[in-house]
Image (cartoon, rainbow, N blue to C red; front, top):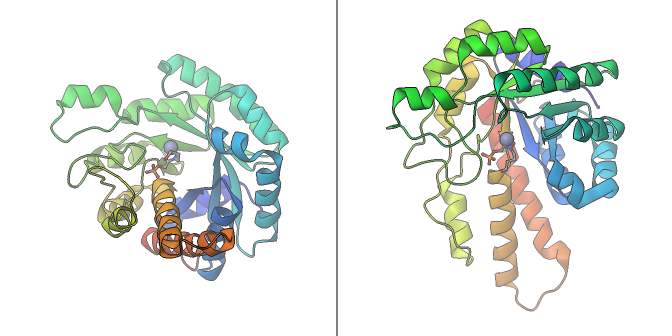
Length: 305
Ligand code: TD3
Ligand code: ZN
């Protein structure tokens, strides 16, 4: 059933588990995410970026909406990294039940003003809002403290930001970054900072750039001819700890892309004579479903639907 983002996330923060926001841009990814959620009785958030909406258009949004409505678990359809008021309004018109406005690259006052404007519009039609404070650049462990401070979310500012904007959930910068290269070895995560933020902000907190980039998937990707450098993601233990401290929404895109692509590659190279798309998209869909299931186990959302 289709619900707002806050409906799912409020319960998650209160009860101390995390819910995955998984990015989709086609039918197979959408099915894999929803099949995993139903199999494990987990609430789930389907995230579409502006790029995904542009790529898939009405066909994709219609499919996502239809499948989310029919799902036997709570599902929110979420605009990921909305870049403008217009983009958010467009998502509201298309029936999204959760929107993100990302003005984290603007100064504090602009971020407050723009976020507030979006909150008013979204709340007027019963949709809940994610905002972001701090910059999601990859921050290395050895970076000087004051340099980190300029990039990562300031706890006192976070409290003020949420008070002034009325946003429903907050994306924080605590060391993660988007993509398959999050740092050397075990990428740095600032748990003490998260703990301070969570003490001042009662709203559900959001972790972007949370993919774990499993070594097994990297090896599979390479074995089938894929080329990738020194990839590294967030250690599962670091995610578990972040959830215990107040993270309720965990964004995962890269892990799904890696799984999907590795299995498409593998299927194509195993059967060079084949040309039936179902024969290589089917195994990729199954692989994504397994990744989503293992993320749900890690987040603790299994059986919460
Ligand atoms: O917002 N997103 C998804 C879009 C970013 C492009 O990958 C995330 O925070 C996902 O982060 P990750 O770790 O999967 O790249
Ligand atoms: Zn993100």
